[in-house]
Length: 118
Image (cartoon, rainbow, N blue to C red):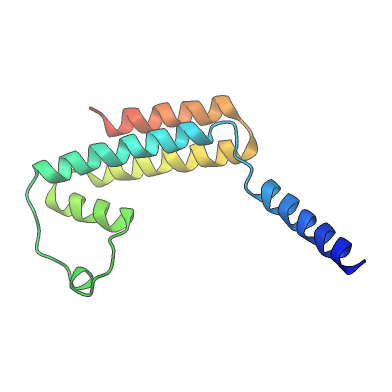
């Protein structure tokens, strides 16, 4: 009888974890656009000037997207307004995706791509 209870508990845990990982109607598009944004920023960073290595980098800490964007802004590669506009649009897309609003999510993704530019 204890094996049956164990199996029921495992099945319940599996079902709960599956519902927690539900992807919204726009999740794949968000991932694709985020990868596109990251690639564009990486290309701009590679083509532009470089800065001194920070103290955090010397301590073998990995950079975050925010720290990279801040460094690129300081170097003049990407304006802070552009970074804020892209971040806000991506946040709107994620919120719309979580709420299940596909058209609002798609519009926010278009806004993010437009804000980043060519």
